[in-house]
Image (cartoon, rainbow, N blue to C red; front, side, top):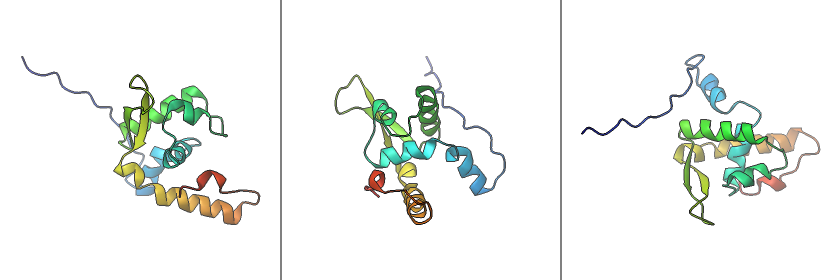
Length: 123
């Protein structure tokens, strides 16, 4: 008997072949880079993301994690706390976003009065 085909989610179609446009299609919304920021800082469980000060709604967090999984930016692993709970970790592709997140942090510190880097000490 043949093995069933493994279903993989198809990324949504691109607006254009422009690399900036393609990148924005993946993480150019209000929440995705904040989830990536939290992963960089070592947060890896759904509840950890919900505890961030920005207050991401659960339905949006679920959607953003799904999109990051589909794009191979994160992967799911067993949590160190319990094998019943899942955690997320950045893939090599996800780790490649670190300089972008760091540059945004540095820009914010330089140009946006009242910002602080306490949340981004890992970069």
